[in-house]
Length: 339
Image 1 (cartoon, rainbow, N blue to C red):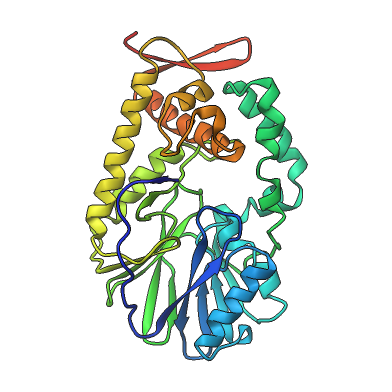
Image 2: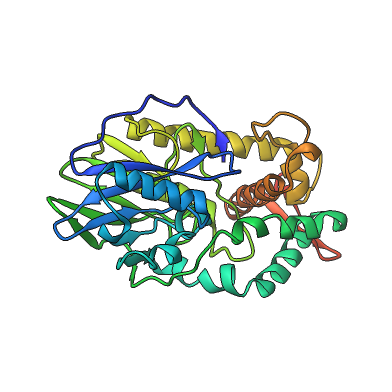
């Protein structure tokens, strides 16, 4: 994720919807926004944070300020299966009788990503090697996310959705909108009458969601992401409720900003390849990641995310016929088709 635009001041939420900032200690994001929706027989929680004592305490504290307890939760909607949105799910089941809702394409990766990770790590190591990560950095790239994986307490969903389902909560009815890209099964929630859009990590402000191509990716994630943005652009939305940062207005304008941002990224990729073929790792090292210092000084996890994000842009340009994919000695490089 990278900075792109200015953050707006907080906006008052409509009656029946509350926000709890669940802390993410050690993360540059600071917190994840968990939304509470009042229902007739309990409350709906959208995203829950990761499994750490301070995250659980923060969620409890936020609920207490609303006069609620964990036991009042009846449904947990997970916008996607990343640790900061899903990790606390299993812990919550110790205190609340809540059903878990998640898209089926994110549900199928829970065990491989969080329970039996050795096979995924081996696949990821080979994937990163093929795309140019130097041998001396491979293990550190693969292991860079292990500390975060420890913050996941697994729980399988009770309801797997595909998009189009309705979640009733009091006087509100939220439509599940499948928005693949940031993850294969990312979902948003749209309340048409009140013109509210819970965007998860699909639409953020001022940061841009990371969209990477990695060992578990399905198809072309960046193509899916751009298509998902265009799919929802015509929705009638007054207020966006994102998973990070403050609520904001200007839904269509922000989507246009995100689309323009990726056009800028495509230009960076073309410029990186202007003097000859390169691996995804080499292209990423030439791109701008809105961070101070040289590429080598970025934290390992950020360099891994940057490499997979650069690869997502390369593959989309390749699918459009702008790039050639060259494989030699087990390494993949990309070149301008006109070069």
